[in-house]
Image 1 (cartoon, rainbow, N blue to C red):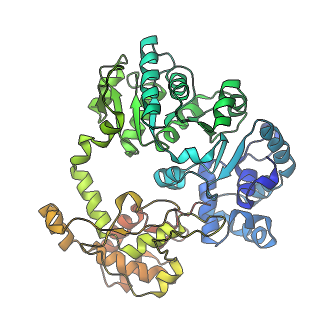
Image 2 (cartoon, rainbow, N blue to C red):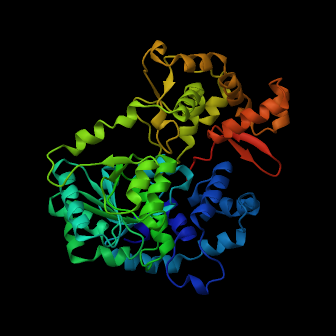
Image 3 (cartoon, one colour):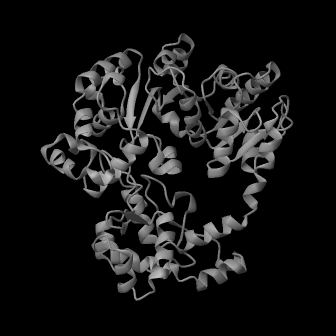
Length: 479
């Protein structure tokens, strides 16, 4: 791998966010993921790509960088680290590593869909990148698990392999290593999300076999030569969950440790269904089930199918009060606004259009008549409504007569849909203040404030500062 192997955007993102060794002695540190997200928003607002920062026009635009609360001299310094980057790329190439950024077409759509602007700006890895889209079962547990827990982990991972499910693991010792071992030895696919030592791990003899055979991919959002860090180990948990379709906790401590924290974070965000071995050996297992985890009672010698188990989750048939509210809000989102948000959610290296899902640009939206509120047969697909980088269309839903009567009543009375439809047309000409929006739509300022807050939380509009204004949602536009 060398500079020529990177897309132009990835090269710039790597200069801005990458670590090449020796940064402690430098006057400016690389951008954190949060800082890069701020920069990405600024680039989108300026209609720029990361690669444009290497042009004269892009350098001139840096004078307005205070919008992203970053110093232009820091960005200019980071962009000048070409030699350090070239030396690092040469080292990483010897280990067979690759680097991709959020603007690359082969960046995992799962991460962008689940994490949106919090998806890591860079991913380092080894192996077949397409495996990152396989999903599968994330198997999670303690580094100090008992031998019986490790044996159980290997048996479940092997069963995943036999049923065609990939295993997602954190790559650490204990349960992680047992999961990877069980899957690979049974001829299955495995995704290892590492918190440290990616370069060293990629040249391990056993891992090289899996990488070369195309059944293993190793990936990390962190410096490939980084040593162990408790912060990185905790931070990578979310990537394990969001690269999977469901997760299984083998054993967990009670209210402490990485396994517990990652499981609680997943339950809070609802990324994937969380199964918990029941009964387990960890004191946190019962507590996780009480907090919303699903009991996983399969024994090592059970003949039941994992695929059938995951396909028949009972929780999918029950909709909580908060789920109904969320569904109601999705039904009320005007189709054109969500489609425009999905289009700007990612700027790929080359424009790509789904065959059966026409894309609508913000400019086309601005010049078109105000979209009408969604009807009973124009319901947005909830799982794709806020996907970063994926085109969004409509799907046929069951007749509204089959929906709860309470939801029907809310749909007929809630005026937010009409407000958001008119807002899409109104903001097509540029950002406006809360007072201007209230005046032009002839509504009370307090009502405008409440609805704008709702639209902002849904990602339909962005709240700009200095001065406070609202613009069509672009925060999903991850460069």
